[in-house]
Each structure stands twice: as C-alpha cells, then as structure tokens.
Length: 235
Length: 295
Image 1 (cartoon, each protein chain N blue to C red):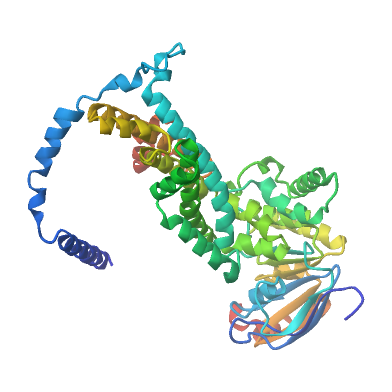
Image 2 (image 1 turned 120 degrees about the vertical axis):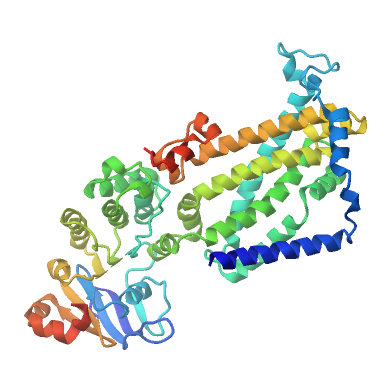
C-alpha cells in the first residue's frame, strides 16, 4: 500500500454466487478519477457495490483507509434519491455526514447544503420535490448530495449516461471540485469518449480480468485494435 | 390471461358459496321474509330520524349560546373524535417506531421477527376486547377508550407500515447505507419521507376507523357517542340511534375528503393539479382526465 492510498483491494473476488472477475489487487489514491469500462453484465456495477459495502466479496478484502462513516459517497444507477422529499432535504443528507457535532451544526449543515445546490445550479428547485424534476436535474441533485458530503471516495454508477452536454459539464465541474480537495472518484462509464475526457485512470473489465491503465497508456493503445481486442460486441 | 383470471375468480366465488352453504347448514329459509322484516323495522322504528339528538339536553342546563353545542350528538361525537384523534396520533408514533424495527429490509431477522410477533399479538385482540380490558383495569370513561384504541392502532398500523416499508425502492436505502447514515437516520430521513403518501393515507384511514370503532367501544363504557347509542338502544329509541348513525356517516365522509386533500400534497396526481373541494365531491377531474383534458 502506498502512502496516499484511500482504498486498497487485496485479492478481491466479486460476484453473487460465482466469481465475475479474477482476484483484484489495486490501490486507489487521492485525487484519482477512475472510469470502469467493459461490456454489459461483466461485473462493473457489482465491483462498485462491493466497494460500497452492499455486496459481500466472495474472497479477498478491501480496506477504506479513511474510515467508513461519511467518507464514502455513492450514487447508484437509479440515483438513490428520496423522490417525495425536496431537493434541499436530499442534499442535506450529504451535509449531515460532513458536518460534525457542534453548536453551529444546524447552521453549518444548511450552509453546506445550499452551497452544493448553488454549485449545481438548482437553487430555484431547492424546495421542490425531487419527483417533479427532469432526469438531468435529478442527476444534479445526486451530485449535489455527494458534493455536500465531501467524501474521500466517490462511487458513481453510470450517472453521466443520458445527460446532455450542458448537464455533463455542470456535473463534471462539481466532481472536479471534489477531486481538487483530494477525493478519489470511481465511476462506471459506458461511453469511452466520456471516460477519456475526465478520467485519469481506466479499469477495463474483460474476460474475467480487470485491466488497469493510466490515461496515457490508454490513449497509446491503437483504437481499432483495442476495440477488436477488448470491447468486442460492445462497439 | 384474462380468462385465467376470470376462472380463478369464479373458483374462489364457488368455494366461498360452498363454505357459506356449509355454515348455514343448507337452511336458507331463515332469509325468507328477512327483507320485509327490515323494511317494517325501518319504517316503524327508525324513520324519520329523531333530530332531537342535536338539541340541548334537559340536564345539565345548557350555558352555551348555541343549543347544538349542548346536544347529545355534538358532545358524543366530539368525545369520540377526541378519543380517535389522541389514540391515532399516539398509536401512529408507536407503530412507526415498531414497524421500522419489523421491516426486513431495514433490520436483521433477529430484531424484526420478535417485533412482528409482538405486533401480531397486539393486533389479534380486537379493539372491543382491549376496551373491555381497560374498563376492567381503570374503570369507565374516555381514558379506557384512548388506551384501547391506541393499542389496537399500534398493532394494525404497525403491520400496514412495515409492509409499505418493505415494498419501497431499494436504491435510496442502499445510497444511505453506503454513505454511512445510521439506521435511525435512514428511517427518519429516507424511509418516512419516501413513503409519506402511504403513511398519510394509512393515518387518515386509521383515524376514520377509530371514529367508527369509537362508537363500538362506547357501548362497553369506554366513552364517546357509543355510550349514547347504547342508552338509546336499551330504551328502544331507534329513531335517535338512526340520527346518530347519520351523524357518524357524515363525519366519516368528511374525514375521507380531508384525507384526499392532505394526500394531494404528496402524491403524484397532486403534481398535475391540486384537487378542489368541488371536484373531490363530484369527481369532475376523473371525467376530464378520461376525455384527455388534464391541465
């Protein structure tokens, strides 16, 4: 394990009944943005859910070096928002974890909540129930929740999918704000182009193996031969 | 699929009919003349309703400006409403604490199972039996009624609530768990807001139920309008009983309308248009939506 590792995977085997990927041993460092690529059903979401503590690993261990409570932000595929509650309530769930007990706790939570809401440009929707927002706006709410949480590790499952470019830019600038503060980000991504735009590291899951590339290594791979070799039916 | 469903309904209906036939041991003759008996009873004893129940009682002397506020109907109904209100609120708070412990998606089996068994035990005694128990323990009066209804509400609402919690989408719960929210925080900030529509609906249903059953528990001495109904029944004053039943019916309808108004703030339909009192009464919106004219 290197000094600034946030997450260490040691011989981690993921899957529900049968292993999906061969044992994974990796470190994730502060400030990294990792995109997980690979064909559908290969185990990308299972890997994220295992790291989030929602699925038991079949073997091996993973260790979050920054503690568990509040240091892990998670945006599932369906966003995990409380649909009948307001935008402000949803975002405050993140702030609740990042603001410790103090006399000014409630004021601080409120400030952090509205700071995140402003950053994502949804201040005029703050008092509306989430169910009334569009898909893009809901993704912004989920991002604001994570931004207010200030986690050390952010996990997101395909949350850029179906977003228009304006929303992608807004969401990614918020993610970069977190990364500048030392947060590591692991995102499942379906579009290789998106991944190349924002990631600093690529994890490709293919043929039951997780291949770890830096962005430079990834860009050096000849695209046509890479697609044939790795993504197969995906493209 | 449609025919299969029809077949299943037919078989169930046939089984119910056979069971009923077994229960009455084939003696259907008792039904003969039943309807005419009912008509005679209604015409001679109940009709017209005696609205004296809405006038001031002769004793104690009425000190109110408006006589209605000293009437049997008003005083009895107000006491029933108070018993129902207090027991619904107390029962709701008790039920929500227990149901969040009983839901399988929120708690491990070793916690949820004993709580479920406890809720079943509380629910298995009808409110009338609870009322008799509390009348024995603490005597006649509204406090016995409140305690009886509260216990029954906990058992009944508790089951409805944990079933709703178990049916909620999993992703908000998973997000809360992965983020590190504590279990009480997940219940307070995710589970309750996400199910607010169902919870409000159940709360209003339970209030209505408690108003209706408040009349029954009054009969065993636990206070409310039931006490007066019981008195009139004993003196064979069925016209007064009928007037009080109409009063109960009106209150139940009003509670139902109130429920619709309250729930419109949290349900999806409310996003389209908040219902007005008028279209709640005449269902105008339903007709408009059928013709595709929903704003």
